[in-house]
Length: 167
Image (cartoon, rainbow, N blue to C red; front, side, top):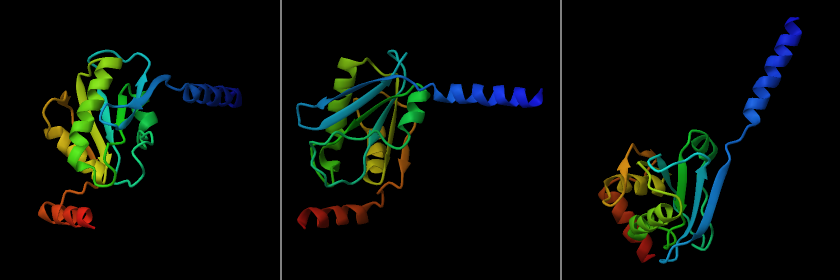
């Protein structure tokens, strides 16, 4: 009797974990030349939250479609839409990243809808961009920032950035 109950319970847990959150995916490029990827879970409506994922320092060509981060599946299951930009500038992309995210938000609003709150998320250089998005104008209300190991060391960071650009 107990064996049958535990077998049924195990099967029920397995079936519920197999139910994936269906999502719509959009890819393309902004007028400025940055590639983007957007994933929207089924049932997302105007006013629901949006995660703006920021990748870290990357020297790959900007023509590559960006990833949506390591927490993509969890965020989609929780009902968050996710949008990411490759940025139009390779490497240290801070000089155009805010404008690239504004372009991405315009695409999102045109193709999907208007988010109620925004959660910037990124690691390393992406964490710094996420912090800057929270302070940027022209974005939805920021619910919080998830910045993993941001490169936020003040003047020393900018000295290193200038050194990188000169190199």
